[in-house]
Image 1 (cartoon, rainbow, N blue to C red):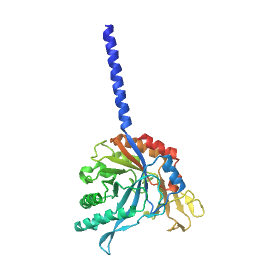
Image 2 (cartoon, rainbow, N blue to C red):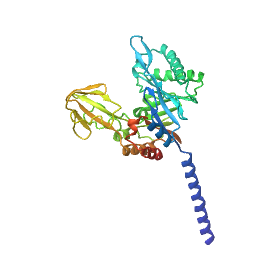
Image 3 (tube, rainbow, N blue to C red):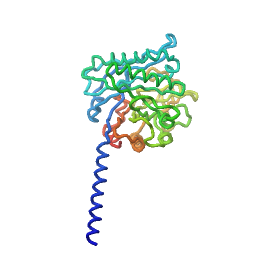
Length: 351
């Protein structure tokens, strides 16, 4: 009887160590790469931006190289908002060139023009990367909120661009994915790329009268993240750390104010608090280059550290791949002033 008891104890001991080892192996194989998006047209890192990259041990940066928009006069797709390199002494980073393609470009472009567009994008990416010291491009990302009417052309452009990029020595291509494209992927389709970047923001109704925060709404997000691990692509995640002011005039959104500073609305002569996150313009004035009229209402939207942590826990349960990038959108000194680097580090660690 004692021998049986010892045998059972030994068996439990062995099984316990087996599962502990399995757990440790799974944890150690789960790799999270901290990264940022850089979305300004002039690349120049401030001391604070460099400091955050160093402290968070960021080794990868998604940089918007240019946008592709439709020119109705030339009736072709053209590059706009091209990046200028003011800082060429880059820290040791892996650069992922990112190209934003407007939906109207894909709506208007013909299939015969896609070959030329793919070639032009590949050539411009290589040209924009020349002169950067110690930079080797291994991946390109396309950012496009394609629709049912533009899906086939976007997917065809990806196939063309794959070939063009490989000819330039660039092996991988990724694409941004929206929440609705994750939940309804059988309807919206899955882009023929190596990986997807889930854009976990801009999920609320910008024009909604009851909207409190169109940047991040976890109630809305939960409606889309219903089938963990079912999306056919390996997913990375982009989280929002930006803020903006939504200007509403006579019930209609007329402007989005970006690059806001903490003192932008400090002058009570021009702005009066109205509700929890709203201001009323009491005297017509300029806000940057935008002219706000008396009576305009500005809804201030930003994401708290608590909301980011809640997002991380939600996404951790949904995304099942062992390796993933977690990117903050975007790297900007004004934006970073709202977050301590320790807070961002804690969010990375949740994944």
